[in-house]
Image (cartoon, rainbow, N blue to C red):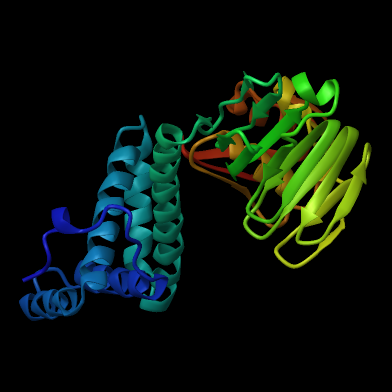
Length: 332
């Protein structure tokens, strides 16, 4: 018999290949309703390995959640039925590609939601999606956390260490850092390196494969993976193997602390990826408008209002499939 989903580890994640197999079974069963032989084959596949059952439960749960969210939005019933009929009419290869993308995207959002909740409760300081907060530390250091970010403190008699575990932070040195020498230097750590500021204000943004350091005042010494001194106005990218100068940004790196995105000839696709950090759900644009450019100052407190003003300056229209699934398309 299939494994009871209540016994599955909440934080386990099946391989993507197995998730796609589960989607494949879902498609076959949906296209062959009432086929008892196929149902038994699916049950056998689920029983072969706990990853199979976990993937099946995740796909089924996500399908139910998406269905509930779509049905809970006024007017979305027609859109949902259209999507259902479209999937039924696709050949198996194209339908598998479509549903794989949707389910894997949803799984990522689901896992991110669980991760955010856990980190918010377990971290010393944390923010959720769309939230920005500032904190004054006991030694006078000021930290600002951007959306979906978290840090832990390790202050002992030997060290003062701020660990950036997720997201983006602005650190402004204070207290002992502004006065006489002391025996506990302040250090900040990301997944990719360790940084020691001296009377500095700087930004750390941690991505999957690297961390971007931007110094706005003072100087910061990068201790690992190789020692480098970064001065005010300079930015570097740090990964596990090297430190290198960062290419110029097409936006103000620290404007988010004031609730703003300030762009300079920024690609629409990149702009939407940035805005998407501050809202729940899926935000994208069609490929034929992704390279459109925009410059300006945009407020972050209401991302729906922000999106609504884009058609005033660009030949695009904003389409809401649901509250959580928004696409910008070329205006016709």
